[in-house]
Image (cartoon, rainbow, N blue to C red; front, side, top):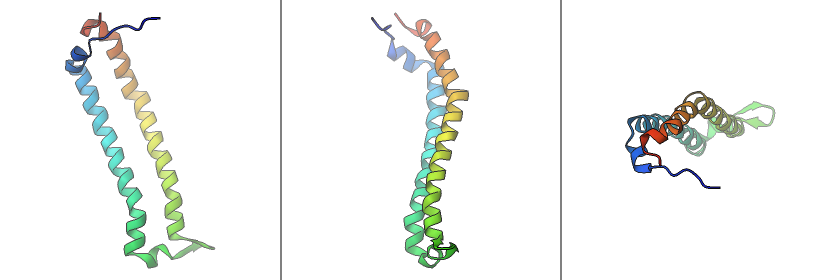
Length: 107
């Protein structure tokens, strides 16, 4: 089974592809910055504010444990945000690009 050959240089030069790439890159870098900042708040906060992170908030659970567990929630939320955006925007634009690939320079 042969795969269709695409003219990748022509697709890369296509303004619609460049717009999709820029839109997706901007969105992904934003999510990456949010996740990295949130991730490093735990060790930095625990280092600079140990009394806050040691404060009991519910039984034996202190703020540090709750914050560490919240990182799982934030990671899942970021994944859900990405999936929602990809399904609503990026996949439609990509499908349109694939349809147009023969016009762009496919063989």
